[in-house]
Length: 502
Ligand code: AMP
Ligand code: ZN
Image (cartoon, rainbow, N blue to C red; front, side):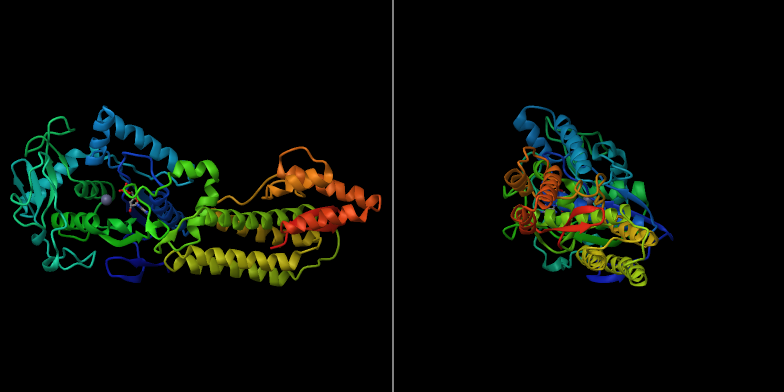
């Protein structure tokens, strides 16, 4: 049974989907006026993992994510750059999609754009007006907060103690407070200002408020109620509180059964944000590291906790991921070099541990998607497999269970969208060798290339030559040099190979 933390009840609860075997998920998408930063990416990656895990557990998931392509920020950017808002939005929508793909995030099943769903929003606003939950004032339409009794429940706020969280300026700059019936009320439709994108409506030319978008699109594509609504924790109030109020007021039913919110990515304990200027663009980070390393870093922190981003943590993530890749490479080597000889392994223990490791992974992920614990299960398993197989040549009869162990590691990391299997020459290729091996090989073996795997091959060859000519000092220099970088040389009947010590 999957359990997840529901923001609405502030507790971990059993997850029961509305339709057996199916899950409907809506995750608020970006406002497209700039490239996304790795804080935004964290939230999208977290929900990508939730989605992938649900798929792996056998659910048929429908994942909807909108694109907010009409907004003040887009209009401001367009004005600054002297081009149209739709041009700005189109450019950054495309960039967003490319960035998400580069980060290994699956495309949503449905990606509606706000500007293409205006009739649905107008329809919803009309329903709200008819049922007394909204009112029009000179081209604007406001939601009547006090008409919806559960307002504040999602974010844990008391309406009577709430200061106006919705101070907004009208398009023409005049204060809104005098037109709203209550300072808490918020705009669902805004009268047009000259030069801004606008659409015809029963209240005149105008554009939708941000919150109404998600209410209209989620009900159109998922129907109400749906299972999971997600976003970053900064969206709980006012965005999600308002989405919920509008949706539930209009339909008289539950909007979303489970509300999931991701913690903020921060730098020096401060939220990463465009306005603070402390952001790193996702595309810039992916210039320096591969997407798997960034995904791995994200997985090392539970999705609800704050995540402190630093280059050191990114390097550590790369090293840890390298250990998993090396473990897989070791297992590949064992399989490829299996001998027609008695088994040196405790097969029963290995098979038992393979089964247990999978269970431990599932239990961790079932417990509110505890990715760090799930990674711990993978590392524990690797340590045990290494302990069992170190320095051994397996027998042909060991191949199936050793292959199962390898497949489990590859498969579990695959649930996270991370590729850990590497193809190629099993004694050197594919492993994540640190760049230092190139200098070491240049020093000891006269290697003049730049490929780390080839450098390791040159070192092994130099060692073999040195041993053949009884140049023990040179042979030891290779061993010690690799040892200092965390690698051991294993001599096997098939020749020497390099393994990671961890
Ligand atoms: P926005 O384009 O600002 O609406 O943000 C898109 C998504 O990124 C929302 O789900 C936000 O909650 C999320 N987000 C923004 N900043 C951060 C951050 N520093 N860490 C994690 N998520 C963030
Ligand atoms: Zn939304």
